[in-house]
Image (cartoon, rainbow, N blue to C red; front, side, top):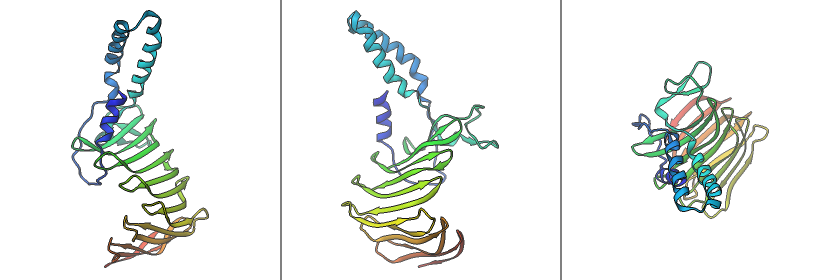
Length: 239
């Protein structure tokens, strides 16, 4: 089953599209019982008596990994109790939801007892991770990492209890382009295109966007300028 899961994840993409058509996926654990029976028969036929127990335990343990559920994001349902459920189920969901575009996966998110707990990951067309972050009790926690197409780290944004505390942006060769300490809630944000030009820059105050934020096109031209006050959008100017 590890090979099956690896194959599925290798064909994932990272293309954010609203209103994408969802494809329902059968939970992986439905095949566990049948596969365990097959494993037992293989062990019985192909191993010596003294080896049977050890090999059986190893193969069944490998199969157990596949018990983690993967459901289509289209059946995700958030109830009034704040918990997330799968479809019409009455037990808070444990497993992964995945956003499918056709037969491939754009991203996955992990839930434990109906709460976002664990990794949330976006993928490229060829199955490479382009962005990964971790959640604890519905809040982003720890390092959020973005990657270039060549697999090198593009940025590391460190979160604590849902708040940004540190930013580091890197060039494709690993050179540090920008660092900012926001542990006290105030600091400068900069993000870059793959060619090294600035994509976005602005400042935080008390962990909220404040003042002028500018987004640039890849060629360096200004795309949009946004004015914030205490996290609230005041004005937006295009071009």
